[in-house]
Length: 125
Image (cartoon, rainbow, N blue to C red; front, side, top):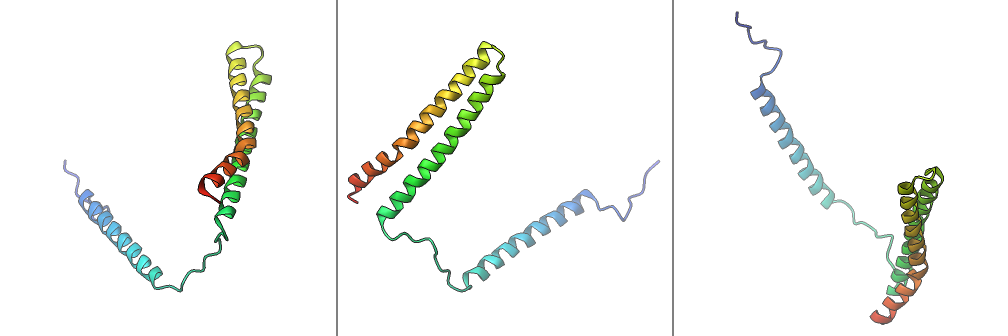
């Protein structure tokens, strides 16, 4: 017995054609939106540094913040692993590795101002 094709359910070919048409329409919309943005009002830049020294100081502050945050995460993970290791030598070793990584992270965070000063002297700022 043959089942008749239902007109309410589109065939695979029809669905593919509709999907391609939607992709083309979406791409056209993106192009139109991009050309519309080009004719928009001029953009005012809010984050312009006064000097190269300001850029390096901001870089130093970001480095210290990121390295300090990562080191704190490593310290927390290492301490937690050490507490819940229950004497398992593998877990204790992983905890020690995380604690060493935290120490290295804090050391790098403390050295960030030195690195920025070296960059300033190299660049001549």
